[in-house]
Length: 162
Ligand SMILES: [Zn+2]
Ligand SMILES: [Zn+2]
Image (cartoon, rainbow, N blue to C red; front, side, top):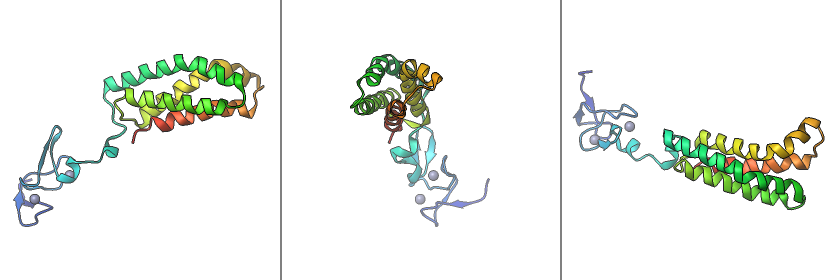
């Protein structure tokens, strides 16, 4: 690629440098040095939202650990929710909210599909021992199904990242 290219922001300036992300040519004044190479100003300062969903291995591990903690802590909460009747949906919402927040923070606040999956599965596992047998028997009220759904919904929503 020896052909002459021109900075996309300064059409009169020749350059041989191009952005590592979008490939557009950029002049030395416009290029930004980042830890993943030279980028154009647009890609160098991506909004936080464009980076969500990208987790490092240790962040995934921490998310899994947090998911485990959610299952352990969630078991008594889920048991309580299946016992108290009225008001249980509020408890489930709060529990799911807390679970999602914990998992989001454990994963370095990146969120994304991994964190959302862990959050959803962890909360579902907490409810499983109490609802599983009743589900198998087909002896379950719509309200009892709503409890885990509310908790799982809040957990997933809150772990999505921003
Ligand atoms: Zn670029
Ligand atoms: Zn330029």
